[in-house]
Length: 267
Image 1 (tube, rainbow, N blue to C red):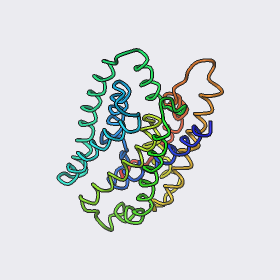
Image 2: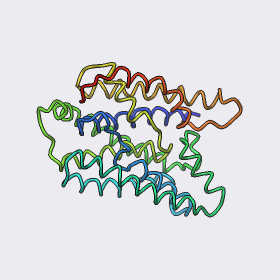
Image 3: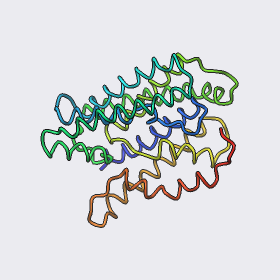
Image 4: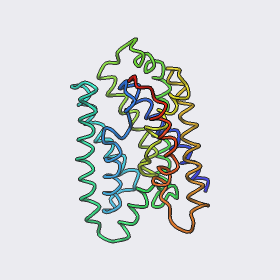
């Protein structure tokens, strides 16, 4: 129970903070940690680890996400932001297709069930070993530390006071990858909070200082995940409710706020 709550806290911070960094880095409200194929890569790594048993969930997820990020690292050096977003969507589709092939060739039904339980948001930490916990906490510390360190620079970049060079953007992607992988590798991909919550934060607080949005987004992300976790655990009507799907239902009114209150003027 305590470990589950730890990952509610960690995921509720890591994913929104990673998302707001991507929005500031791209100067685009559609910036999202999954847009470059990181979520698909995490699923591919977890699927490969589950089906083959060659490593733990976290290690498999991290290795595939790292490979994906390194590819995006070099692409970032060569293309502009719009091209990078397009590349990320197409690349993510390709990675997702590989994951589908791996999953549909699962050796047993138990392997398939383990993978899908992880993909539905694994806050029960099934299949997670102590080494995974330590590894993910190290990744979180690295990613969050860089987020705080680069906060002032990202704010100035977002305000167009400076332009972050492509090589530095590529290094920031690696740090964001560490932050996001710390949650995704343990609990699986969790929708909405890495895209919707940062946008909600910017509706609530008009400040352009990214540090303020770190704290607001984190508080909202943790709160939303905690409510979802409690519903799944204690108000589940006797059926298994995947956290990702349940959160999408709970967050529907919040999504409506984004579209109703977001001004027509683009970022």
